[in-house]
Length: 180
Image (cartoon, rainbow, N blue to C red; front, top):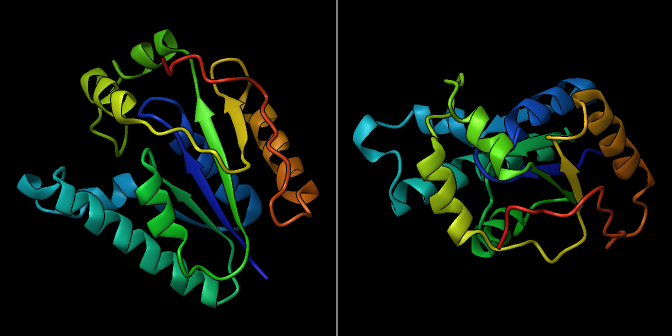
């Protein structure tokens, strides 16, 4: 039976690069909020109703894949508790949270470069950072500023494999320094 793996973090943290690599490594379905957002009309991509519609589309696609027994890697900021709770409500099977983060200086540098699907810049990072609600549930935190993608993938695979308990341990490779 598959599982749902939620990869979350702030814009520029490296979560999409990691999530896509993890999905490939696990032969999982990859769902990206950025890719779904780009399918919306230009003027309706960033309001609260658009945010809800994006998470709804991700949840529907996740449910469809999970009902087929597939593993899903869902990639989004998931910066608020209500969005996380809404998304996992009614999902079949296990849900794992993987947080990707980096120092603000690393994120600032990354956000200067145009990315394939994300339109977020440093101003968006700051806005989401100020509203970010830390996850209290067990999860793995990975510092993309100090770990290579390969190291992050190995840590994630180990966490997903060794996490036999329903609540699982809260493993943290490092702590978030960007949250004040």
